[in-house]
Image 1 (cartoon, chains in turn red, blue):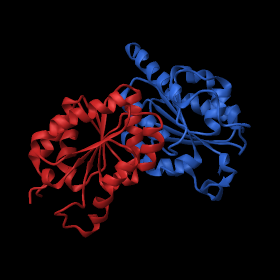
Image 2 (cartoon, chains in turn cyan, green; image 1 turned 90 degrees about the horizontal axis):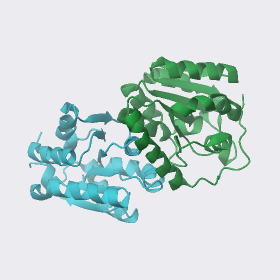
Image 3 (cartoon, helix red, strand yellow; image 1 turned 180 degrees about the vertical axis):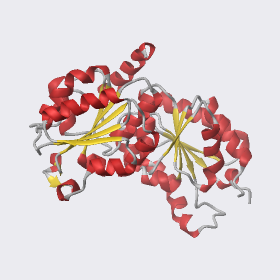
Length: 170
Length: 191
């Protein structure tokens, strides 16, 4: 499977350095290594979800309890989680750190992924959620740290989009 | 049984737990009986109260957590029951007030009015302790047993479809949210 292990490792390290201790996730191809790394780390708790919106609740509970967390999901999972993001994360000013695999961008071979890629950034804009791209190894850890910093200083959800150029070794 | 009477019956026991409620009647009735800084009212995001409770319970395994859920909310996040059951935190009691309707929007009947059994669904999802109760006395006894059980419990309380006259209270959402987070922070050294 050509999912990048070095990129997954960098993201994992970035989360760890940001103090993230609880990670909720719904498996998707690009996230398999990352999810395994979280699961193998005794200092982290992986919460496997049935649907991504639950992750908003998990991260909200973790934040209120004082534990930094992150959400791993595909962009279609983000689309499925929007009501929770708006009516829990935004309404209650929760610093959600959302890592979203940006499927359906240039290079995508799976026809079923191609709609989501076209709308994800527009939806993030419409929701006024600050986001940045992770598309190159040199800025991964730095951008995760910066995203986490803004999430907490603003007390709002933020997103990082994981792009194909970073995650997939064609 | 009336839900407000059921909440009244367990109100003293909620002092030592942290409590997450759903929106609407449950939040308004609990506040009418007496708000405390360890109560958080999720006034939207229907379905996620149990997920918020799970997030707290996993973050703070020594902290007793009570979720006051409802049939309409739980039906919006049935998958969350499988997540609760997968991690089955020993410090979580999941109460579901089942009035078989979406009361606050005018009484639209939910699927529990046509036979869906939330305790059976929770049991099928893998929640280790489940029960359905119909009187205040049964409810109080089952709640106390759940608090003492050290095992994840989903307790379904069948209640009448009656609620408070008003749903908006003078406790603002963010005041409640920050007060609750501060309470959890101050409580940490005692755990």
